[in-house]
Length: 300
Image (cartoon, rainbow, N blue to C red):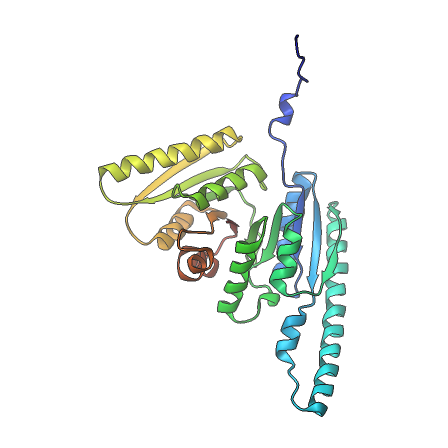
């Protein structure tokens, strides 16, 4: 018996998967930048953005701690006042977000305020979104740079979606640096970026690998880079460059290559055999969050 298969138009071969983009809203300046990136991605992929504002009750409780019975009464009143104040600010952020998105001609959906802890609220919403866009200097990540890094690390580690961490100035993404070592984390980040193609496929891609010394290491590096390049080509990327560097510090190597190639975005995996949190707080991923001057596309 002859089975007839439906004819699939070739135009459907590279359908974008970036349909839902989550934006963390914050009083800081980089919320506008995060929104700008999210709008750009949504419009390019016929997607929609979601604004998420936070009332961090856990943080409020840490700030306000009662003592005796009388002190507990005033502490509870202060907690309510702070929550109301932050909720009012969150609603204002949502209103401004909606105005900006609609003025740009983009779609938005399910904008809301969450009152859980930061990591819990954001990672819960990431379950039903393709990409999280958040500002690097967001006030919700606290003024303490170390704590901010920890919060971002936890979000990337626990979230189901990829994370785009943006800086305080918008820059069009035309060239991308992919940090690739052939490991599972790097492969997952590479695949996720290719599948989502948030900035399209008409980009210059530079794949960076830092190898060990010796001829065998060089051949292995060439093999890894060729494999990564072939994968990207299969997903519609045509302008691909390969860079292999011998020895040195990995973080410095990535940042130096980013600077010399004038990349607008770094794609990196966020995991190692030593464990997600240990890797984040002790090596390359933490360093990228702390030191990169360009946006980061991170996936675990």
